Amino acid sequence: MIDKILLFPYYLVLKLRDRRYSRPGRRQNAAEVPTLCIGNVTAGGTGKTPHVEMVLRMLQQSETWAGKQLAVLSLGYKRDSRGFQQVMADGTATVFGDEPLQIKKKFPAVTVAVDKDRVEGCDLLVHPAKLNDAKVARKCWNREFPAAEYIVLDDAFQYRKLKATRTVVLVDWNRPVHKDMLLPLGRLRDLPERIFDADAVIVTKCPAELDDLSKAKFVQEAGFSDYLPSSCDAMNPRGRRQLVLFTTIHYGQPEGVYPAAELRYTYAKKAILVTGIAGDGPLRAHLSDTYKLIRRFSFRDHHRFAWNDINRIQDAVKREPTAAVLTTEKDAQRLLDFSAMPASVKERLLQVPITVDFLTEEERETFAELIAGI
Image (cartoon, rainbow, N blue to C red; front, top):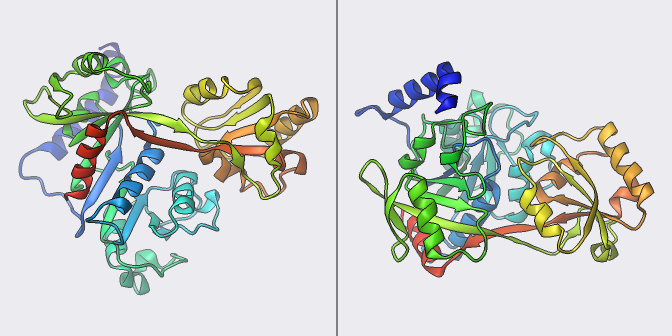
């Protein structure tokens, strides 16, 4: 409540914007193919990218969409390029953004594109031939890709001009929306009640062992009632039943970022952690079980690494020659953009792979039906 008082002008703008787009009869653009929006109401940290990757894996394994032309459309935050661009696996985070590049490298058969205008982006993904004469796409460098049959919209929940077929909102278990505040007092970039607009709410970064009682308590505190674990849904304050699902993080074995990486460093007892993400708490907790984290370099989300940053990391390596340098997959994309990376860092720079999955098979099957049946 205090944020609504202290930040009343910002709160009022959000309320008026929501009312504008929510009023009955307002027309919204929709793509010609099924679209699934993965978003949140907070400023990062909920795990959008690994959830987009989970969705792609599930679609590729489904009877309906296996073998179909899947696409991902993202903003490409902090990229230097303009307009619609197809992301290429051999490109850079500077050109395409770190998250789209990470997705493309993991899913080479999926068309990944970036565009600030999501309506335009969906249209071009469905009709790539328009890139041959569209003025808005004259700067697009890579124009050859198949027409999309299904589009996953990465972080498009606030883009109200485009109406997705299905919407999924992510909420961090460790920092729930109902206990947060609007920016800059908290991490909320949108009204907390907007989570009730989605088709499904996924509570992310949950403990791997979470019983139904703990789930029900969280759901109730979030404003829902009548939570049913068997059907994975609850009644929201607007009188509509809404899916509420829970996922957890799985970390993989560290792997080299550069071809020159010495994998013997995966067995090191000490580690230097380098991150530029919204919150590295879960990663630090995981790594602490295996490594003694002797140094930590924590930067802002999407931080673009400069000479000063690399020199600090190199100095830490010199002081701890047996330590590994660990980072996230997302940060690795931006570190790879640094062309003059010292050999001493290259050989011990390892990324920690991350995947997410549902806590129960019932949740997984329910979500699979939601995303495949559109």
